[in-house]
Image (cartoon, rainbow, N blue to C red; front, side):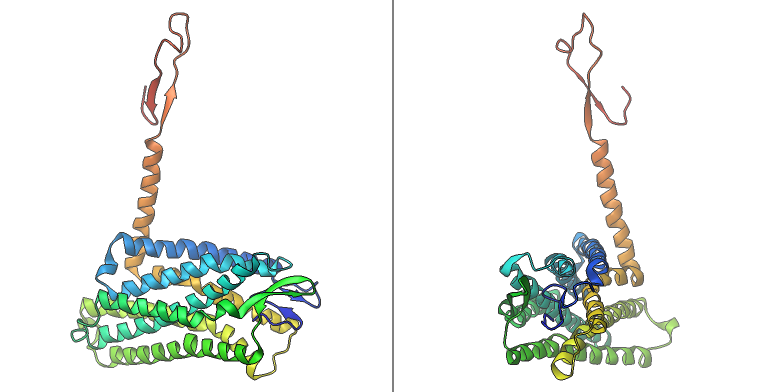
Length: 350
């Protein structure tokens, strides 16, 4: 948001005309720390599951899920740690370059996630509505091409944010905030809302509405549904939940920006708290997807357990393979120099 007028946040620091009121100075860094921990571990597990089992080579849905996890990891690594400091430090301490890069990655990953969700919604519709006809279209090669286009569009849409933000000194405090004139800022913010949220959400809403309608009106009773159709239902249910969470988590962020440009947005304590909530909700979305996969998909739960078991097995093996040197007691006949040391493996008898 980055507006100077009582409060400055989302791209700067929590600076106010009443510096004693900083409700987010403790709670937000704690929340962001949890988001960073859960998001890093969760998305790392998703990548490990997909890459370790080689499923992405033949499943378009898994390719899109992989892309979502990569976008979330980029967001967590390049955005969350830096943005957590705006509520605790007096100013932006990371310099002009990081001011631009952090906000570029915020919008880059937002576009990548929303466009990927739109693409996977179309993929699920084709898989369920036209399972045979869409086989030639729903290939791993075409999915990889779609992902390449998604990232290209994301870079194009997010590129202007490299010049949108800059360091500005407010009451002697360096703040990372928008420097464009109001007219250009308004156009940019509306474009982000339309192309990064409104259009992708409209596409996935239409696709999933048609998918749900077909699933519940055009199939036989549950007893006669094949295992393949049951699996497709579960996958579709999981992806719909992921898409719904993205819509809900990013909605307050966009509402505040539109409210600012098309209404009267008061810079008061209540709206500042509302912006903190919106900030946390949009960032929390980056750690929620792996939780959904684990709760909904037996396949992912099974694979998560296998990854954990593999890691524990490797750790145990590394400990058991450690060796240590045991020197015999020194004596007049056998000094430590005259007798070579014994090598004893941990866990074995001498």
